[in-house]
Each structure stands twice: as structure tokens, then as C-alpha cells.
Image (tube, rainbow, N blue to C red; front, side, top):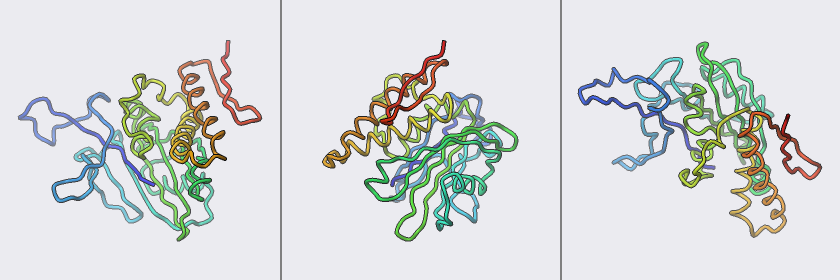
Length: 256
């Protein structure tokens, strides 16, 4: 599984402005990250630097280390009989992220195709007393009984400036070209349960469509794509929530 992580670009509009004077003035100055290959052929996270961490790989935007700075953490750890919620809390415990509440979703396609779990969640927590939104995922356990976990957090303003559900789809390789989505407002995180379900439906639809030769998955693929469309339309409304019928199809419920 390919993991892609988030990044921040801060801009100084005066050429004489020193690096130390760069500040995050608004979410419009912050862009999501991309992996690049530098001049030496090394893959790096553009605009981010690796910090000291004994447990895993910890990154922060260069020159920006405070409570409002986004963070990224990745680790590979032995499977200690984790369920998803226990693993996510363990993952967060190795970072500055505290007081988390989350909603998780299992990507069924990944389990059927790869034989191991792919679980993701969106939620809210605090970093040094400041509210942040986060995205976490896990992949595994693998043949060595190890799990890979990723965690990205940012303030709600920055998180949604990155187009909410869209940025982890891009950073994990499920969406190659985000410009194909003209209306990105459908990806805004309105509530964590809808965001997690929408993310899972998009991943399932992507994986099923790539392996459509598996005819037994065709109905599930169609259902996942239909669910993704239904959920994206529902979350545009403040008066809509999602339930599922006996066949697992998403049903929008509009409140008067």
C-alpha cells in the first residue's frame, strides 16, 4: 500500500523576508503535501522535515513547530492483538495528539483482494489544547504480523482547506488527479462518520474497478460507487444523515 502524507507550503511575498519570519496567516497559504524525488534520486516529503522520534517516523513542516502546525506520524509495529480502535489510540499516543474521538471504517475490498485489513478513520482531538481534525489509517497485519499506521492532523480550517476527505485519497494513491473533481465541496468533513464512510466507499470503488475481472465483486463495486455518490450528495446538506438498508446500500434521510 502506498502512503502519501500531507505538507504545508508557507509563502513570503517579499523576497527579503527571512525564513524565520514565515508564518501561517491563513489556511489559504497552506497546501497539501506531495512526495518528490530530489536531485539525488531520494524520495522526500517536500516542505517537511523529519523530527526525533523513537517509535516511528515523525514529520513537521520546516520551520513551523507550534500547536497549530500540522503533523504527520508513521510507524510499523508488531500486531499486539489490536482491534482498529485500540491501534488508533496507540498510534496517537506516540504523538502530541490527545483527547481523540474517532469514527472508523473497514475497506472490504482490500480484505477480499489482499487478505488483510485496511481501516481508516477521521476524528477530532487536541494538540497543546488546540482543536485539530485528524486522519488515521492502518494496513495489516502482514505476513510478519506487523501493522503499518499513518496519522495526519491539522487545525479544522487547514484540514478542510486540503479538501477534507480528498487529500487522504490523493496521498494514498486512490485519486491520481484531484483536478478531475470540479466541485470539491463534497469532500468537506461535515461529520466524522460520514467522512469515514465516504472515504471507504471511494477506496472500495477504486479497488473493485481495478480488479473488475473478479466477477463476484461486481455487485459490491456498483454498491460502493452508488454509496459514494449518495453520501457525497447528503453531506452537502445540514439536514441529512445516512442509514443503510438490508443490502448495505446508503439511504439519505433528509430532516424537515
